[in-house]
Length: 309
Image 1 (cartoon, rainbow, N blue to C red):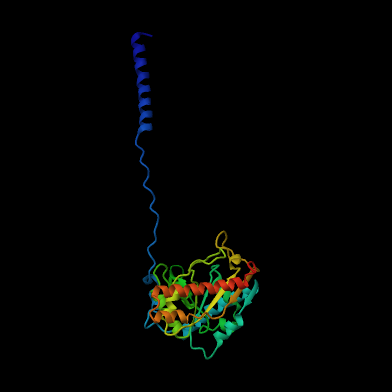
Image 2 (cartoon, rainbow, N blue to C red):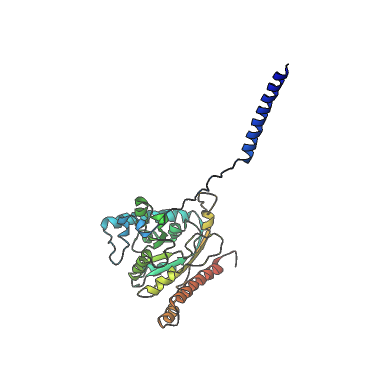
């Protein structure tokens, strides 16, 4: 091999080596641009106007759309069918019920002029309507005696089909995060003034820790703004968390031990009187009312919970 061949061969090798070294250096030191962070999807807020318009008309005061014959038939079918399923569920569970006869007497009292508010803890998505399976069939098929319940509009009223199902089932749409002054709460007060029965879960969410969380103030505002003080019944129950755990399964289970206790009426007239006399602010009044109801349900738990007796 001549010197020229050796020179050309060496030059070629050096060129290849230089190219490889440059390429490796560039790959190592080239600027790496991270992909932009994913922006989490934030759904638009669910507002009252998100509810289908034909349904909104039924809740807008002062002139809500009145129920007609066909409407009452559909509502009776939904409420009654749900009641039958609830009764089947409770009959297939190990149920202990306390204070039901006294509560039923209040519902059936022909001379009752006051509305009824029931308040309870919230252990499971099955609480309503399944807990009402302890009521007699004649009540379960009477839409004028059966409860109306406050329900989250962003769950119950997101489509026309669901909206009609839940409104026939006597569910009042409430907007979570909209506070205590909203159309659903106004409609609740109107129903109570007319002698209806309203059920409220003041925790506003399912809680399965055997300890209630702080009550929302909506029930306090309802009592304050009614034409007259209603009959307020505390209810405590336990065992629905076993029938339908909050996490881990989509199934529900039968033959679970369930305790359901109806308490005596809670009197809040002294709190309301202090507010009307100017001794309490609106906020303090709401706080004291919700605290009294919280304590009433806690007292039922202490009385009927076998695990703490």
